[in-house]
Amino acid sequence: MPPWPPCRAARRLPGPRAIRACIRPEKKPPGKIHRSGVPSTRHVASRSCCTDLTRENVRTPSRATRPGDVSDVNDRPSVWFHTFGCKANQYDTERMRQELELRGAETALSADRADVAVINTCTVTNQADANARRLVRRLRRQRPDLRIVVAGCSTSFRETEYHALAEVDGVVPGHDPSAVARLVPQLGDVAEADPVTAGRSAGSFAPLRRNARGTRAWLKIQDGCDRKCSFCATRIARGASVSRPVDEVVAEAATLARAHPELVITGIHIGHYGKDLDADPGRDGPRAPASLATLCERLLEDVPARIRLSSIEATEIDDRLVDLLEAADGQLAPHLHVPLQSGSDRVLRLMRRWHTREAYRARVLAIAERLAAIDPGAFGLGADIIVGFPGEGEEEFEETRALVAELPYTYLHVFPYSVRDGTVAASLPDRVPGDVAAARSRTLRDMGLRKGRAYSETRAGTMADIVVEGRDDRVAGVTGDYLRVELLGDATPGDRFSARLRGRGGRLTAEVPAGARAADVVQPSVATLRGRSGASALRVPAGDGARTHERLAAVDDDHRTRDPVSRR
Image (cartoon, rainbow, N blue to C red):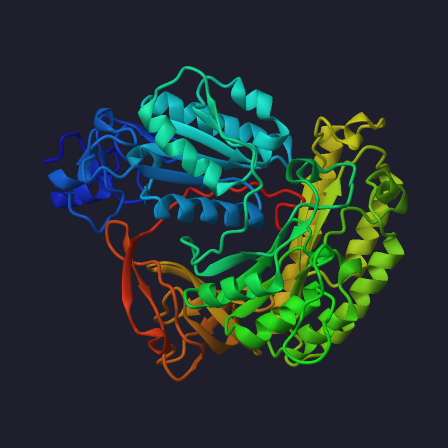
C-alpha cells in the first residue's frame, strides 16, 4: 500500500490500478494540485504512469536539499525551469539549462523534486507579469525550502518589483545563463534574507547543442530591437538589436540538426538580422552583406533539417528571401508569420509602426501570390493583431476587419491591448473599454478560425512534409505550412516523412508510411524524448555514429503567454 490513501478517482479502481492511477500524469496526486504542477502533499511520487511505486521514487518534500547538500541520489543540485513567453525566451531557457548542466547541475522533472527553480519571465503584457509573480508565490507557499531565481524580460523591466518580493532568492536582470549559474551555488551556501542579485552582463551567445524540449529546436540569431513601437516593453527590456555572426549560427544549427528535424529561426526582430554585422565573407566570390537571406542561404547549404522562420515584419521580407522560399522545395518552410497589429493607418501611427496599411497589404499579397503558386499550393500565413488600442474607434476597427477579410491568412493571434507602464502608449488618451476590446477580439478570432478551416479543406488530398512532435503515445504531425495533422499509424517524435493529407471530421489526417524511419523519410529520424522515469534516449542517425545517449528529460509546465510579439 502507498503511504497515502489513493486519490478520489483511483479509489474506484481495484487493487494495484489504484496506485497507478494516483501517479498518472493526467490524474491529481494526493492533496491539492495547482497549475504549477506542485501538489500540496506529504509525499510526492514519480509522475510517470509507467513507474511502479517503490521506496526509491517516493520523496518527502521536507527532505528536499539545497544545492551543495547531499541529496537522495548525489550531491548535484537539481534545477527546475519554467518559461513564460516567446520562442526567444524558450531558447534562452535552454541556454540556462545547458549552462547549469555543464557546471554539474541536474534538470528536475518538476518543481516538487527540485532544489532550485529558475523562472524565465515575460513582460509583453500585464498578465504575463502577473502570472510570473503568481507562480513565485505559489512555489514559495508549497515549497518553503525551494530556492527561487527569476530572470528574463520582466526582471529587466521591473527589477525593483522583483527585489521587493520576499519569496524571491535571486534576481537576474535579463537572460545571461552564466549569471543564473553563478546564483545557484550562492543560494545553496547562504540562506540570506535579502535577494542575491547577479551582475549585469550581456554575455556571449553560447552555442546550444540541443533543445531539451520537443522535436523542433529554436535557433536564436539575434536579440533586441531598434524599432520603437509605442506599446512594446520588450524592446526596453532587451535593448538594441545584436546579431550573431553567420558562421556561429550555422555551426550551432548543424549541431542542433543532429537532434532535431526542424529548426525555428527566432529572435526579437529577425528582419534586422545582420545590419550590425560586417559582410559575410562567403565561400566563393566577393563578400556579401550579412542579412537574413544570406544566413538562410548558408543554412540551406549546410544544414539538413527543415528551417522555419518565426515572426518577421512583412515589409522586411526582401525578394531574395522570397526567392529562397520559392526554390527551397520545402527545406525552408512555406510559412510566414507577419505581424499586422492594426489595419488602420491612424492607429498604426499611434503605435509608431513604420509601415502603412497599403504597404503591408501590397507586400503580403505579392508574397502570397508567388508562394501559393508552388505545388501543392501550400503557404501558411499568420499575423498578430492588437485590438482596443487607445484611439481605435469603430471606423478604425472596421478597417482592420476588412483587411483581415481580404488577406489569405491561415490563422490569427488576436489580443486586447495591454497597458505597459513606461511605454509611450501608456499615456495615450481615448482608452477603449475592456468589454468592447473583448468583443472585437472575438470577431477577429472567429474570422481566423473560419479562414483556417477553409485553408485546411484546400489541403486535403495534397502531399505534405510532416515532422512528428509530442511525447510517447501523444504525437501529432506539423506540416511545412504550419498545419497540425492527426497521424494514423506508428510514429515517433522526431520522425520526418512525406504523406498525403486527408480530411476527416473537420480535421486533417495523414497515414504514417510503413518504414517511415527508413527509406520513406524525408530526413533521418532524430531526437526522441522517450523513456521511463524521466530518462530518454537521444537517437542519433546512423551516419552520426548510431549512438544512444541517456539524459534527463525536462518536463516544464510551459504556461506560455500568447501575446503580440510572443510568437517570435
